[in-house]
Amino acid sequence: MSDQPGGRPPFGAVLCDVDNVIRHFDSTHLEALERAAGLTEGTTKKVAFSPEVDGPLLLGRITEQEWVAAIAAGLAGLVDEETGWALGTALLESPFHADEAVVTLLRRAQIRVPLVLLSNATLGLERDLDALGLTELADHVVNSARVGLAKPDPRIFELAAARAGVRPERCLFVDDTLENVEAAAALGMTAVHFREAADLEQALAPLFV
Image (cartoon, rainbow, N blue to C red; front, side, top):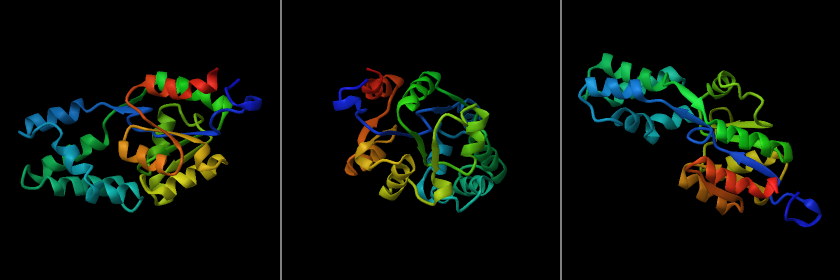
């Protein structure tokens, strides 16, 4: 079943990011609003995902509506208050879908080893996973907003490994953000910088031999 002595899998757990790996957002409506407001595409996200604006959200210290208010405040001077709120709301309510190829690979992996979703996310993550039909995808979900820790803090990686019941060096970690990949590797994890489903497939291949 694997290339390890006695059939032992090459890693004992898979820790996987959610956004831009499993879940992808459609920014079409937001971008249309930005064009109508005379803003460069991506302006709202630049404000929204700056550390001082989304940091408190991802640590569970503010609500999603408070985040929208912070986005609107950050856009002040570029657009009026009403437009700022509309842009922040459009970002918050962006439709999303799951990458079925990635989901299929993770379901196969979860048969062999524990799967933990490790995400810098809002308190709405579990609700959104349910909307995607993915509530049962993983053995555990480690959500930054619920545990008060966010990647690349090494403590959240250690927490996810503990939830999986394995040492960090026995974990495969998958994320689209290079900083997080490097932090996981520093803990001894096998770390994969995700760009497309083929990256995940290659990383999981030893489990499927």
